[in-house]
Length: 182
Image 1 (spheres, rainbow, N blue to C red):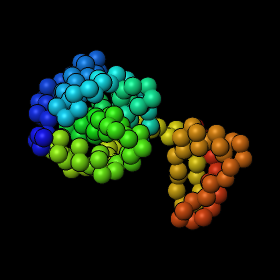
Image 2: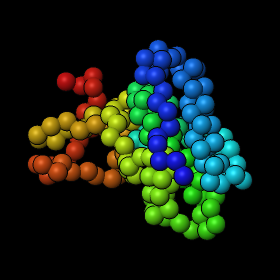
Image 3: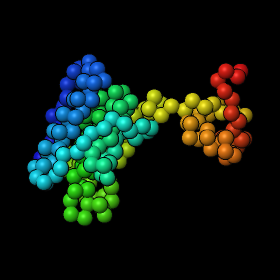
Image 4: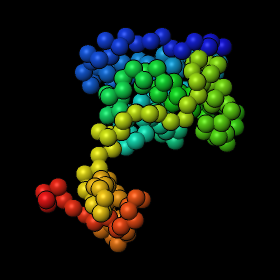
């Protein structure tokens, strides 16, 4: 098995790409990772690729639908890391799932870690450290006695339906304060 990472994509080239070009390049990188996986599992089907993942997750091997979902906001903001780490990470999931007993294996278990190390030459890391501010907007502002807190639409809807949240620092109930209210 190969133990070297996929060849680096030129950083200056990635930085200059439009969104459309970046998505095409990401598909090429997925294909490169798939070809590497086919060296150990020739019958591995090629995954479809979607750029429709939202929130804090960078990528997801969507095994039921037959492909990979990538977060377009995090891809655009973390281009090199996506090409070097996220796409191989998701392809490792894709490969492990298609092994014997793959659906029964732990997502970040021994087999996945082996693929990351031995096939992609990467340290197996379960989570990323990307800034998710733009990918996971929290437009609803709440206040306690000591600070402002920003909620997502989902959390705000829970408050509207009666749920209460308390500040971890001052223990006061958080109260909705729209931006236009000073």
